[in-house]
Image: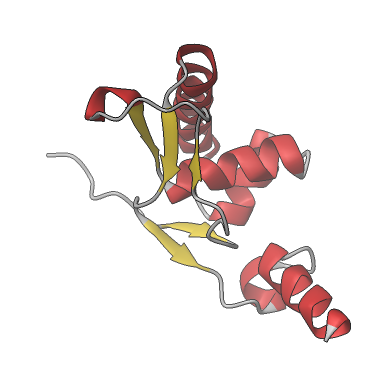
Length: 121
């Protein structure tokens, strides 16, 4: 019997969750769903420039789990870009951080984003 999937910790849900070609053909065969935890691995590894091990620590999961999630996320991005499919980010097994230093650390994306919003107000 397989272990239940552990909820992965993520710092944010994307503000924009649908991406695709301008001249989009409608249909389920042209739609790719990327989960929130797959999005988080792309954000942490590619945008924040963390290693897979550092990403695993932030998400409170094993490095091998991050490796699998990251591979799936990259395949979905490539399929969307190369084959002109709509990419939608939604769902998955995740929990949002609570923006505390104990939960997420000083580099928490949600905390940084909320401070930017406070400064611009």
